[in-house]
Image (cartoon, rainbow, N blue to C red; front, side, top):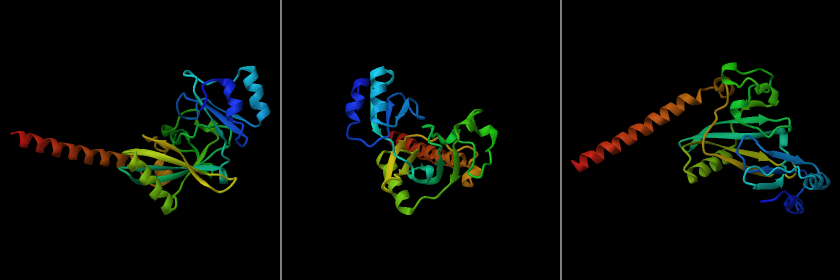
Length: 214
């Protein structure tokens, strides 16, 4: 972690290039810049073009090449596996928001009502995928430990050594566009069922409390 652009070169000294500098300015890949070599990073630091964002705080970290050209996002609901998707990226964008991906791996564009107008420009493609049992178990343990009712966990397989890395924990969900076509069901319907069950639980507890007071 750095708080001044001049510290980026020192922070990257023991890292494998390429590296990325990610300013602390939000999600969807905002503010992430890739540097292919130490020379490129040094030139940027000297030129003052490394932008650390509003609060001048950023991460300097290795860029992990994705095995198979994709990352995997696992959505959960009520602490349980809901569905998984593979997100295939061109490597030119760090915005992997599933709601913005509007093309399947076979080139079919998803329903326009579910997609932003400029989504096809991202070059991202998506397909439904069920991860191995051990991954589902790990994801469920993560969201339960974090008390996340509805959220997503993303992981990547490092193409350099085959290690599986959980790198992003989202405390809310952006369901994939045109989910019925991609994963075979509408997750919004299951979310509504979950919220209804939670509301009924709250109503029962409140009713019991009123009875106890009475």
